[in-house]
Every structure is written in C-alpha cells, then in structure tokens.
Image 1: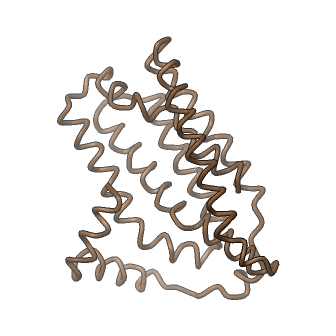
Image 2: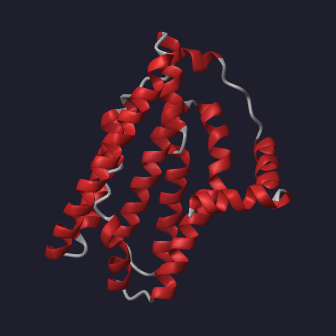
Amino acid sequence: MYLLKGVLWFMVAMPIIVLFFQEHGLSLTEVMIIQAIYSLSVAVFEIPSGYIADLFGRKHTIVLSTIFSFSGYLVFSFFGGFYAFAAASILVGIGGSLMSGSDSALLYDTLLETGDKKTYTKIEGRNYAIGNFSEAIAGILGGFLAVSSIYLPIYVQTGILFLSIPIALTLVEPTMHEENKIERSFKAILGVVKFAMVENAKLRWLIIYSSA
C-alpha cells in the first residue's frame, strides 16, 4: 500500500496542467470548464464507487481505478483539443472516485483479518505522509521537466500511472471481505445516486464541494 500511495500521488503533471491545456490552444474559460467536468465526474461516481467495491472487491476496484487514470493520461498524451481533454478528465475523475476510500477500506479489512486493527490509524497516517511527501517531490520535479518541454510531465505521468497497474495487481483481497460481500443491484445504485444528487440538496452540495 505504501508503494501504491507513493506512485499514485507522484503527480508531476499537476503543476503544469493548466499551461499544458493552454499550449493546446484552450482558453482560460475552456480550462475552467474542463476542471469543472473533472470535479463533476468525481462527484457523480463517488457514490456508486462504494457499491462497486462491495460487488467486485477492494482490490479489483483499485486496479480498475489505476486503469481509468492511466487511460485518461493516455488521451492527454496523444490527443489534443477541448473534447479530448474533457473525455480524459472524465476518465481520470472516475479513476479518482474508484480509488477514494477503497485503499483505506482494503487496509482496514486486512488489519481486521490479521488482528492488527489497532494499528490502522498509525499505518494509514504513515501512508498519507508518504503520499504527501511524494506529491511535494513530484511538484518540484514537474516544474523542472516542463522547462525542457511542457509535454514531458504529461508523458512521465502517463508512465507512472502505467506502473501503478501492476502494483495494484499485487494487492491481496482479505478473505473476510470476500465472505461479507453484499449483493447490490444496478437499480439500487441508481436509487442512491438519485437520492444523493437530486433529492437531498444538502448532501448534493456537500459531495460537489468535497470533490472540487
């Protein structure tokens, strides 16, 4: 989990992403729209992602997350223009939603199974410390890479996200979670999404705010 967190938070593209969009001819308004599309995709898929984890397991959900994020950066790397970047942002947003909570749940289930539940807070804190350190280093490196080429951080980011897929595949799904999977219907998932995003205004804005 430490390695996966460090790799996923090594976001060398983050400091230059706006400049990258503008290099492709996007206006600042279009850049903001793409950012809004990303945030909206995170908010919309945040709710069903928990059900997906229950259906298919934490590990499979995490692997799927890495594939979506990698696919999004493939689009960033080889395509240009507003619509391509909007599609890529949706893919990355879905990837982020699928990862959200799944890694922590996998860690907790694993510690629960091994009888080390009391160490969860310590290990999770260490996990986030590694992620924050990785993000800080990546931010500095991304700026240096952009001096050579504004495209280079995007290419490097794509390679890093590709590496996250085999790392995610090495994770082990706790048998405890396998035994306690809850069957969820697609109709039930839509019902929860409708309640959170349509019927309950307070919850809707809380989700949108947290995804921004």
